[in-house]
Structures are given as C-alpha cells and as structure tokens.
Image (cartoon, rainbow, N blue to C red; front, top):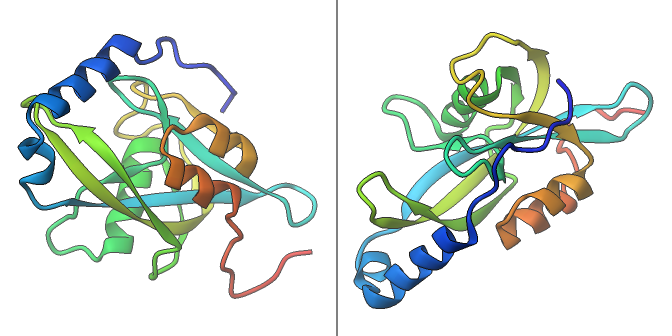
Length: 175
C-alpha cells in the first residue's frame, strides 16, 4: 500500500454549513442520546525494533483521514465489531484486545442530514494479515504512518491525542 493523498478534501463550506445547521437547531445535537461506535486502532511493528506504524484510511464521502470504525453489531462484542470494521474498510486482520485503549468523540453527519454526537471506543488490533481484496476496496485510501503522522492527519482532537500517545498494550515485548 502506497502513501497517497485523498483526491478531494472536505469543502470548508460543507463544514461551515453543518455548524450553521447545528447553531440553528441545537436539539438535533443535544436532544438525543449519544451514538456509540467502535473503532480499530490498527498497528504493526516496523521490520526492525519496537517502532510501530498506524493504519489511517480515508472516509468514503469527504475523503478525510480517519481510522476504521462503525456502529455496534448485533451478536458481536465491541472488540469483534471493531475487528470486522477493520476488515471491511481496510482489509486487515489481527489480534484485537478485548478492552478499549481509549475513546474519542466526533460529530457524524447522517444520511438524512441530521447530526449524531458519537462516542468511539477504540480497540487495539495488532495487524497480522493484510489483503488487497476486501469489501470497501477502491472506496478508500489506506496508509501506514508513524503515530505522530497519524495524529497530524486526523481531524478529531481527542483522536489526535490518542494516536500520538499510543503505546501497544502487548502481552509480549519486542526488541
């Protein structure tokens, strides 16, 4: 997988329009319960030593940099749902930790034009398998980058902090 820039960036006008919409109708944001999502903090060790790379992907619509994430899945535990999202959105599989390594919040624009305030519990996945044929192939750009570069690319402040400070919670140590 090569490092590519998204072909289009979110228009500043679209973000401004979303904020203006929220200002006019705050009940859309504050009148409802928070949406729960599960995210996959996918990482791999570099060839030599303890340094890691983190997987970032682009969203399908705005093409901004994000991490794989999605809604809860019936019959699946949170860490299992995160692992499924990583597979469907990025074609990666690996060892997922059962406990979240952190969480962040963001505003999600829904298909009907409404906005949901989402809380994303993040689950660490040490990637052991990468496939080029996966469900959302061709709809996203994938890139493996340093934790600091991953933090630079994403928009959400809490996610930036989580990425730049991420240290794998491993049962074994690497040298």
